[in-house]
Amino acid sequence: MTRIVIGMSGGVDSSLAASLLREQGHDVIGVTMKLWPCAEIDGGFTRADACCSPGETIDARAVAVGAGVPHYVVDCEDEFQASVVDRFIAGYAAGETPNPCVRCNESIKFGALWDHADRLGAERVATGHYARVGTAFDRWLLRTAVDRAKDQTYFLFSLTQAQLARAEFPVGGMTKAEVREAAGARAISTAQKAESMDLCFTGRDGVEGFLRRKLPQAFVPGPIMHIDGTVLGEHQGLGAVTVGQRKGLGVAWTEPLFVVKRDVAANTVVMGPRAALMVDTLHLRECTWHVAAPTAAGLTCRVRLRHHGTPVPATIFPTETGARVHLHQPQQRTGAGQACVAYDDAGEWCLGGGWIGPGRAGGTADSASVPIGAHVTGA
Image (cartoon, rainbow, N blue to C red; front, top):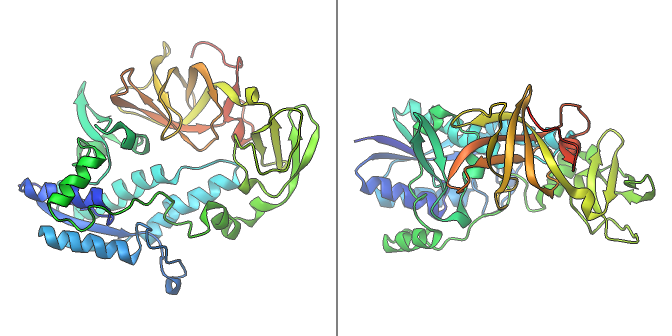
């Protein structure tokens, strides 16, 4: 019998995962991590669907008790603040568009939770993520979920070999509909519970409201410029602007214009036509490779630039600071701080990936994407 610690968020996926593991005869221990102050008395907020809210914790405990699983609540606020929230704020301050969910997985759900699992003598750690794990060439690989629409390997790409070797994803082989049906058949109270889609720490006023409180310098007005140098107007803060944005800036021009760059040093928004958004080269930093790092000959694969994006053909070459991705067909510019994740041609196996960052020539964060034709073939 294997002792497995499972992270229980109070949602249907982790609830069913805990029940399935218990039915398989494992020694299962449920753990809910308190990540953020969610009550006004703690200096936080009371959004009912936040993954660390009292209501979610109560739901997780009820499911654990019903499944005969011991349940603990672990305070991980300090780790979450340092590893996820502070990095999120720092990323925005640098002009990036951070992805805190990936950081949370690597440092909290497969970091702090794993440390607690070790203290409990657990051999493996499980979560309710839609993903699978397999092996090839004596390496551990992430495999995409059966339900491709719910696949979460994009958020797990940075897990190490040691983490993947001990990971369990019990619902990765099921569709969301099957998960709800199975949970209902077991009379699990969270079977039809709605999903939470927002960041757990931003509060009711969303990312912009959170940043206005924590990073007021990101909301200083500045110029809006056309890529040809023409002044178009004034923005109300880079924190309220995203690359690719078209509306809401009060700009009129002879053709539709989109945000193509946020220049932090000059506090300037740069806009241009849709063609100016298209790039064919990305530079990556902090790369993780599950099979082997790309060689000078290049790794031909497909890459996903956004969680719900379709993987597109690319070749990845190594660089001194990470990797360079040559997109076979131009794609819309992706802001620095986002993840670029590589898959095999069939989209079945996650090969690894990295964080989109500035190119070797440096520049502002949003220069991470290189305009069409600017790449150099080869390593």
